[in-house]
Length: 160
Image 1: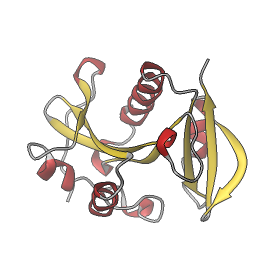
Image 2: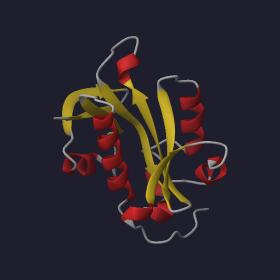
Image 3: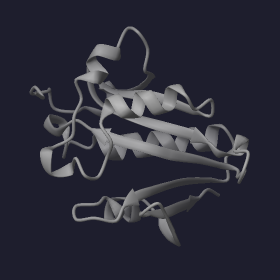
Image 4: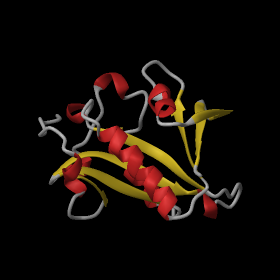
């Protein structure tokens, strides 16, 4: 069950590696019931990234309160299709924390991180189902590539 969280302030927002100190807080995160078909639960995400050397799990915080989680994938090391791309593998914001700007702040952090690490682009995909976040990503400058992978529509943001 999600608990109430304080209102967001830009100065309090931070992105931290998921580790033994914040794991329990991250495991308590969950999306709204009507979004469960759009994003995998935290437990599945952490299990998947544990077995993917090119992936990393990061927690979103407002002060000391976990408000979300994301997984990133370094496509430069991909054995099948290497690309100079930082791939947003998964993003979720806790149901009690949505509509407070955390998703937008997380996306800005990802874009800034991609620039810091000299990636040419940021990629992502989303489930093509009711309630998807495609419009949100488009407002941030992402464009559809026309590709669909395992039922998910791919999007791309080219960095200057």
